[in-house]
Amino acid sequence: MQISQLIADRAGADIITCDAGTPVKDVVAMLASKRIGALPVMQGGQIAGIFSERDLIYRMADEGSACLDKTVGEVMTAPAITVDKSAKVIEALALMTRRRIRHLPVVDGNAMCGFISIGDLVKSRIDEVENEAEAMRNYIQTV
Image 1 (tube, rainbow, N blue to C red):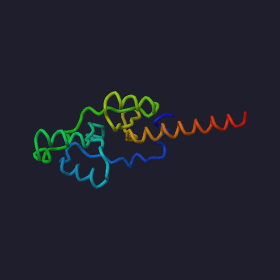
Image 2: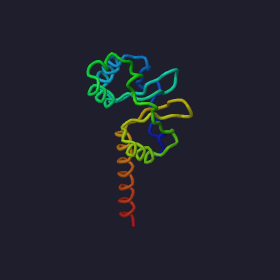
Image 3: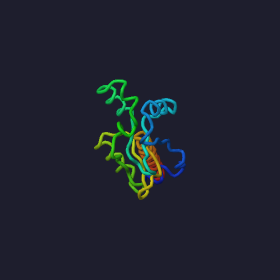
Image 4: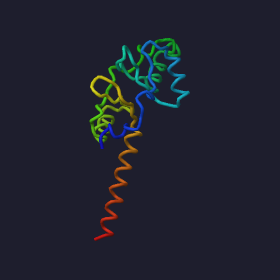
């Protein structure tokens, strides 16, 4: 399955993002209120980076609460690692495993068209394996 199929029923306008100039404390509040672990950081209509719970924890450990007064552009992970919408789910899973990340912006050319988590990909793979197993059981019963 391709990533494009996975995000087909999602509206691009529903992706929660922030601007690189947004204060960290505001983005932390956004993550908490939306109950999400990361979001793409935009600058000039392009993906500038990713801000995640890990970014906050690492900065809090190094700088304490002073990091909350910085802009998210100063503390985000950049550049963002992205995946093309034509990539296969298994390729995105391999990328996330290799790079030790949990979220990926999905791009179509230079434009972001989705945002996926490792949970989205794992669920997709489980569904695929279950469907294959069911097809195999049905085949065996008909032989």
